[in-house]
Amino acid sequence: MSERVSYAPVGTPLGPAFVAWTDQGVCAVDLTEDEADFLAFWAARLGQPVERAAAVPETVAAALATGEVEGVALDLRGVSPFAADVLRAVASIPRGEVRSYSWVARCAGRPRAVRAAASAIARNPVPLVVPCHRVVRGDGRIGNYGLGGSDAKRKLLAGEGFLAAASGP
Image 1 (cartoon, rainbow, N blue to C red):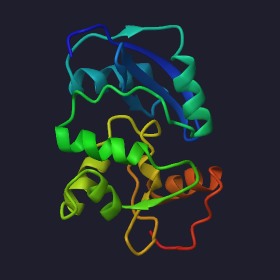
Image 2 (cartoon, helix red, strand yellow; image 1 turned 135 degrees about the vertical axis):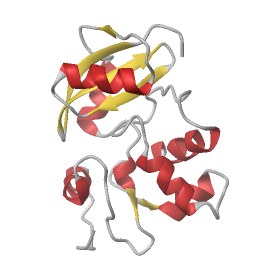
Image 3 (cartoon, rainbow, N blue to C red; image 1 turned 90 degrees about the vertical axis):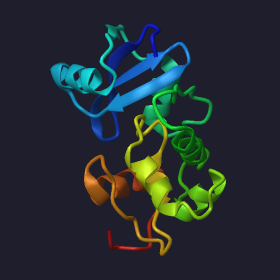
Image 4 (cartoon, rainbow, N blue to C red; image 1 turned 180 degrees about the vertical axis):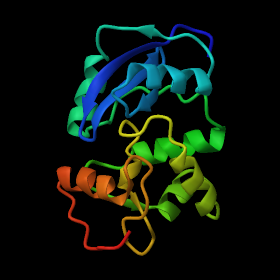
């Protein structure tokens, strides 16, 4: 990525965050309220300058507020082709629904690569915009979540009207 990258703070259901985007779409979401922490995260990730904007694009702010992420443009040039396929599959999961890691692997074209799909999800550079909280274990249990653990995942799913039957992580 050598084009202009903009960023701005935004509120999310899990608290304050910074979102970065290019002309192609959202390329990073970092849950922090500290701008210096975000800039350090960005420098470590890509090592290129970012430009502060007044606000995130309206479509992105609405998607983060409501969980309705369909149609939000993504800039996934920083991930492998397989990871991009995984993230596009996850982005297709409707609000209030969940899918298994094996479903994601199948949708990404590699049905036997469940662990690789899980790893790609764990490294999701645009959490909440690509709703990785909607991916659960094959047995229906919630599983882990990198943005605050399984409690945060449950909070996001409950906010979308999904009541998980499983109580375990």
